[in-house]
Image 1 (cartoon, rainbow, N blue to C red):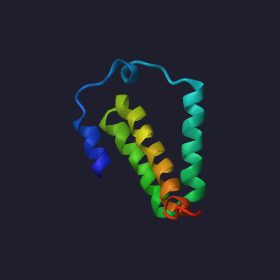
Image 2 (tube, helix red, strand yellow):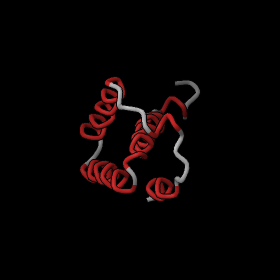
Image 3 (cartoon, rainbow, N blue to C red):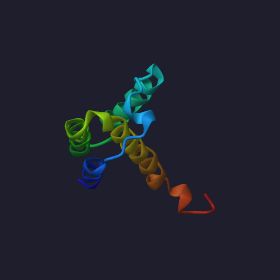
Image 4 (tube, rainbow, N blue to C red):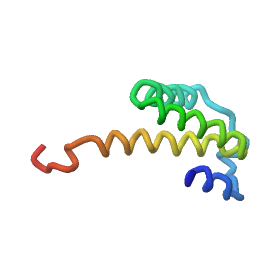
Length: 91
């Protein structure tokens, strides 16, 4: 809800988000993010993932790239937070 609220409040759209076309490399990155959610997350989180995509598109399709960025950051921070190596300096 916090991320969707942030997307609702965006009034300024930088030119690199506004009219740029989706590159194939970005589509592949989106595929990896979707795969992460489909294979590594429980059912409730997957449902939240798809609801977030749907709701962010409904808020403003031009903000969809920002929504994908938020989801990719979650993937990165999730892996970091479950890794014990950052908690134990001897690991």
